[in-house]
Length: 374
Image (cartoon, rainbow, N blue to C red):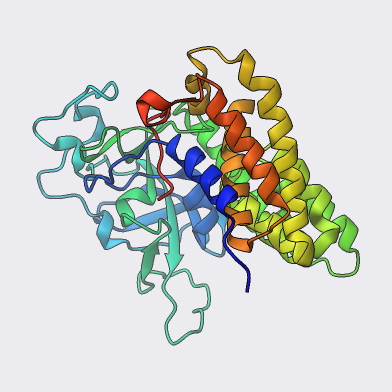
């Protein structure tokens, strides 16, 4: 019977203490995500508003089979009778802005002929897709966003800018404002459109790569490049596929671990590493932890009192190594990999020997108050 490693668990405890808890706030509201909607939509269309609320006229189709002139009906995008156009909305300027009248929380009533981008999912009837047709008003459409409904599955275009619903501040409402978000930091429609096309291009490339079966080396190399890219959804699917590819994919996974993209999903990354390593996962996890120990011994004595600020910078070396060490310890602890106990104890001893990492009078490690894994 394998026993739980005392030294290993204690190191995990120490490092976990260095991660401040953030209370879960029930005030979180839905926010539009350009990448998420582009990835999950079955249909993406540039449309015009029509005299009939909730019915749109397709101008261009960027994903799937709707055609110019088709008329998708989306009742959830009907404005209220007292709705006003975007030009009459309060000009919110950021986190300190407030719309006391709640106007910006409502779907706008844009002039007829105004343009929007809709991210839709066709509701299948009886498990089979209905054929494309010019008269599409009978088709039921669902939002591409997995949370928040149709309001966060659409972009409104006004004055060459994109507008979307998002939560600027928690607690606070989802409000319509200029739509800029990482990695698109301006609301210019041309830039937003280019990002949509970028996501669709990567999605197509991933699909082609996943279908490759006769050349596993090339497939793994392509998946590795996708995992290093800037499309979050593609990263996760590529890493999952790399994990299922076995040891042939380990070089690509290690490359992502060495220089992860921003942002990245650390738990998906470490899971892919463990799955690809198979029976050797404990040994390889331990080897990685030994490398991290060398890193911390070299860097620890050089830290300044403000080193915790770097933990709020995804992509910074301290962020990556701090994050990785915690995940490695969790995995090694779960596997009860006995050879790692000495390395774990050495890391523990070093950690508590550094005043900037740990001071007994605090009763815990210094704590960046920004995340929680519990």
